[in-house]
Image 1 (cartoon, rainbow, N blue to C red):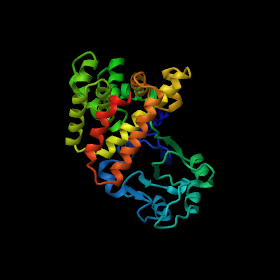
Image 2: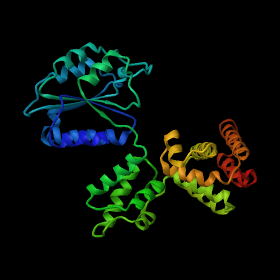
Image 3: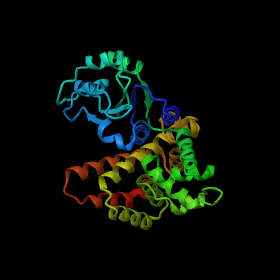
Image 4: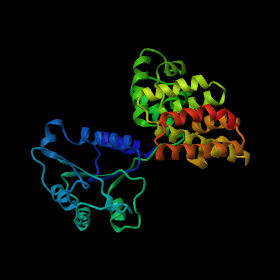
Length: 342
């Protein structure tokens, strides 16, 4: 994880004059911002030497750049966040104001020695064809906050647990991903809880994870499918009703069901072509644990049956969106009919 190297430099107060933080992982963006706030300026200086600008809220880039040139008040440096610099992307947005990037070009040629300027771009990709993108990447410290995949997420969990002063078993890492999913906000919350529980013990174990970890909606949907296809309809419906009590929207549940069956179909297809689970995970850009779970269900269906289920889910989606039929009942009927589609 390259981001760890950048974080280490920030903790040592080895700052760059300009940072570009970009990617589609909001948790890593948030952590980077908090780290800069903690180490660049003191709490006493916050009111004077910290500012945050959102270019989607009517602030112009020129205004932000003018502030970057200002000398800090009663402190060593200023910290400035500039959010949503959409001029770095190919996205076509109707901006409230026009941004003159020439002011940034001039600043990058000679950055203020008193300012730490941070561009926060929550985009999966930047437009590398643009001159300003190339210039900013060349003249800034680039921190990629991208979605973690494969072994990176396991490494992140191990490091996160280590920061809490405890250890975690390898199988416990796998189990916490299986139950809590790969949302880093949720994982961070679960790790904090597990670490607190495990203080004074040798390590976080699988048993601890199973006992304490809250199931993600994705894991609940997997359980829903597992119970239904294994002729445990009453249990499946009970779990479905529990999700409704937790205010989960039927349309969201349906979308997750469709996504899981789509993955099952893809895993079955690639397995038949001789791909191993790790290869499939790489091909589909999905964590190996999700592939393992999908492979378990793929064995229960033929290609034809899976195609029928996908068609049925599409019909459910249409029914939910275009009729006054009870939305909760649509999924209930789908689950009760699932066995007949094997």
